[in-house]
Image (cartoon, rainbow, N blue to C red; front, side, top):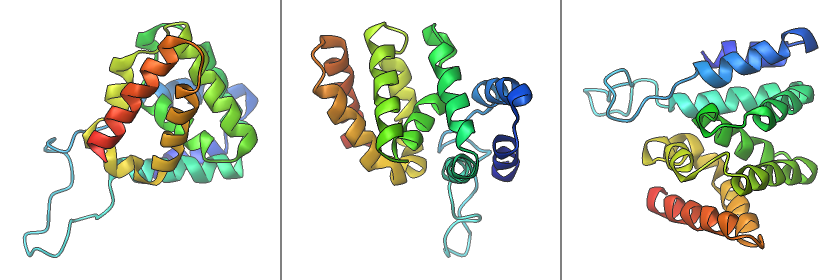
Length: 178
């Protein structure tokens, strides 16, 4: 699946971009650690069968695709900006914001300002954040801990109460899960 995602994102065109983004945002579901579909430990106690977490491999595929096709970053940010209702947001949205944030100063500012606007307008809430930063996803998000922490710091410096409350909850979830 990660190879397919990387291929789709890397090779999407302006005509297919909206459809690819919509399908990936709504179609990718992540399993919990207790889910029987997850990879099982090796019975010989030599690690796990398929050692890496599926979410981590998926984020690495997105990272590679975004580096090869920077226009894909913009397509995902535009789709995220267009989503208005809290039900329209998926766990993947927060993960991709953290991923985009890790790419550098110009993208960092775009990711934080988009999240700040979403929180202020009530389009995303604490339930969405709790799903995105659940303990079950800590393996996938381990590489992005500094970016997520930086996002929380930026939101904590905001002048409005909803962003500060969102940042406080983000700190709680980060330090409880990591």
